Image (cartoon, rainbow, N blue to C red; front, side, top):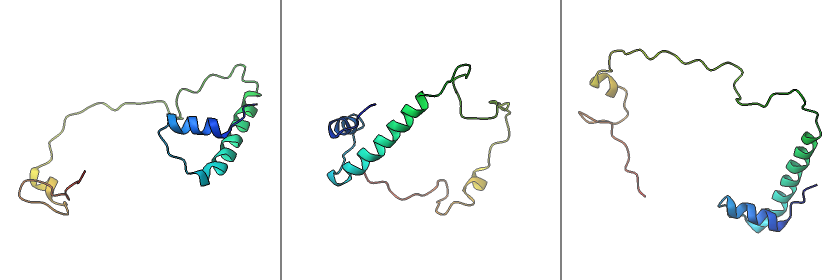
Length: 96
């Protein structure tokens, strides 16, 4: 059984570039211990003959054919814009 302790939690936080508040450490340790226990239970299952899951989609991937169409007219593209001038969408300035 893997033991999740404060040292391991701090190492994982460092690797994930997370800052963990000391007030939340106990709850995180409890949750991580539950996850590890669940994963250990999964390892007990006999998965002989079970193919690995390589996609979450139940449907096979189908790609639509790329068909050219008429471009959207400039005026029509700007028609529903909440804010615009004669040529462009107007958006609030992004400050870094």
